[in-house]
Image 1 (cartoon, rainbow, N blue to C red):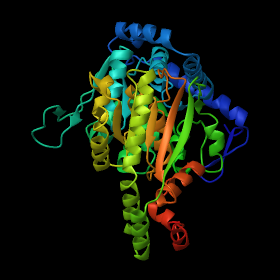
Image 2: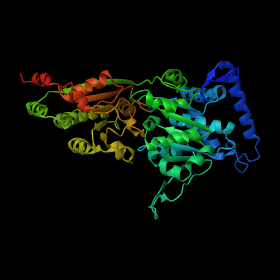
Image 3: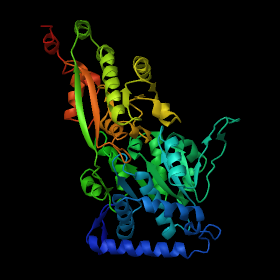
Image 4: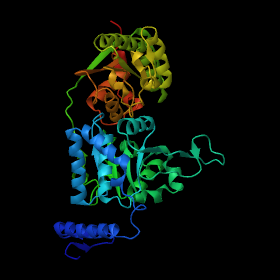
Length: 474
């Protein structure tokens, strides 16, 4: 229609009348939908999502537990479907605010209206979240769920692996994000055309890698998708653009990405749980001071890593001492409470566990889901265990050091405690670091500019000899 569009330099067009263009788009999409629904090949052997007994029971059960912000999110996504005819939605909810059931119910209701030719739901989730997601879908929401087996490249697959892609109709098919490339080679891209897809923790799929490009390919093939996360921003907006563009009915670039972002379905719930940030500074000792001076005199990037290791090594005892004290205080009011103690690495976690176990029952990450989980007053996890579990909400305090990382990870970790189901009116987040050290500087950086990654080497450029010289013992 020349009045709505005029070609300038193919494949680009000049929009002369955006209102008329929207009317034209709506007319075309309605024609496509009518043609699809009236197709003699439509349907899945006469079945329909709204006729599935287990799904109707799930919808009835989950609807009774929906909170107001979740209902509003579902309604807003349904409205966007009608008004914008968009391919998908970007759902933003804070950690612990119920993204899973929101996306699940939206997908089912959309399928009841438009899913005559859609066979299944694909739920793509990153490492470390699969087990808890399966538990939620099956036990909490009573949803028909299938864990897609990993596809083996070997002639003789291991136990639990298969040679071909195995999907099940009228079920949520949970797929590990790291297995996407192999699954696509076995036909997942074709199956995506008859699937609604939920991309869980989609900010983990931003970076331009082979794995994430596989997720983008599925996103473009499916009739409807939801990309959900609590932390949409990572290093900068450029990593968000590609996914954001698929949720809009207009081209998205760096000039108009804020306009596109305004279409995100972002719901925030004001929890009646306050968060108190605390900083515990450990005095620097002569042994650390002398070692830092020696390292600073050397050259190379490794000096900053070694300096951080030395500082953290002399801070661990104070971390454990504070965690034990906090756990005892929390358990005096909440018998099954305690502390989530965050370590930098696996080796660091093992050291903290040994120090803590002398004073109180101490468990590792696996103990959070154990049958006797409540006996552990201190639970030690590494900083990368920041997503995919709800069981830490029985704890009331998070104790951590200052570790290199990004704002999204730190926010997600705090969300393990401050979430729906937390019974305390206040949770505490305690950072323990050595005063006037490079890790103290890192903590100050996190507190002031918590929106980007920063390396120890970058911080080291600011950690000058003058600063170290000022650390002389009085």
